[in-house]
Length: 65
Image (cartoon, rainbow, N blue to C red):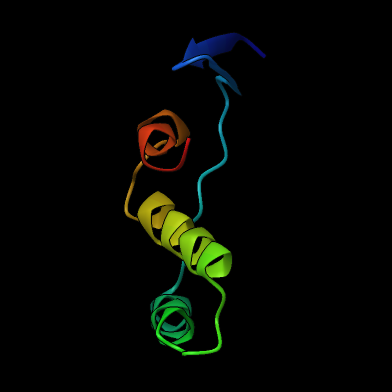
């Protein structure tokens, strides 16, 4: 695997991508709005949602770097 860098972070060129079903998207949306969910968990749920929407890891780094 080839390594590259964005903003001082290393990433692997063959990156992971999340693909969700419609039911999984709805469950993720429901979970993200539950009051007892911790902020860090909300961030991870949003990362999964954006990955499913086609965002790459390098594109997400400036948001959560």
